[in-house]
Amino acid sequence: MTEPIIVGNWKMNTNVSEAVHLAQQIRQAAEQSGVDHQCGIVLCPPFVNLSAVGNCLRGSTIALGAQNCWIEPYGAFTGEISAAMLRSVGCEFVIIGHSERRTIFHEDDALIRQKMLRAWEESLVPILCVGETLHERQLHRTWNVLESQLEQLLAIEERRNPWVCAYEPVWAIGTGIAAEPPQIEQAHAFLRALLDAHGCTHVPILYGGSITPTNAVALFSVPNVAGGLVGGASLNADSFVHIIAASIHARATNR
Ligand code: 13P
Image (cartoon, rainbow, N blue to C red; front, side, top):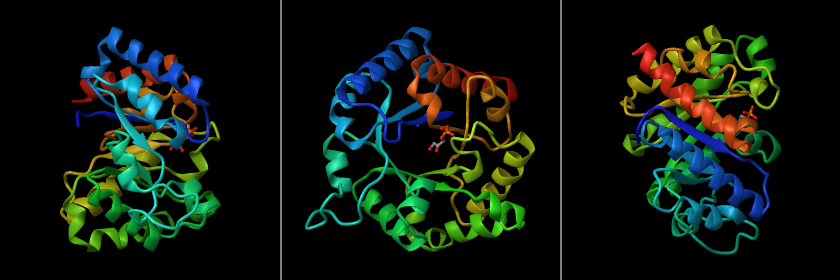
């Protein structure tokens, strides 16, 4: 996929008509400004809106992604959605291990590893989220946390498949307080070295956490930041396309 990569995680927002409207607005603004050919763009609406958003994106360069999947292909797992189902509605990407899944739904690294394997089995590109809590940062445990979140994955052969890593410090998500560029630089350098040492030079590392049109250029200018995972600001077409344009600008000026 073209870098930079900007992923919109809509979380549990939009009903079907709002989702269609937002996807249409994003597509139109991206195509009119020409950013759709200079950036990898992925929209991740809630499950029930995937088909409708997929229809809006048909024939565009904008890809469809989901926010989660289950580890089995089918069966008695009430309330869950399989990677094969996501593939069948046109998804190319799936977010795995978001901090909200880890904390609210108690997903651990072993389950997340299984989800990654299932996503690959269905030829989806997983976007794996990692990141420390404020408490862990204050205890100077950031590097241990990031390493342990990646440990199981970096031990398996499948790591050579396509995937994306997203550094999302938990304390920066939805708080309006993005990490500072030096903090992002350190974390991304750490992750880059860790991934490279395990034969994952092909894995782009995105930053996520309170990205806005105002801070986007500064955040995307940080070395080893290949793009962004955007929550709140992806629910507004103007803001989201502004962030896409910022990522392209940052890449062009820092090359
Ligand atoms: P915000 O951009 O709303 O902080 O959310 C970030 C995020 O969790 C994206 O996955």
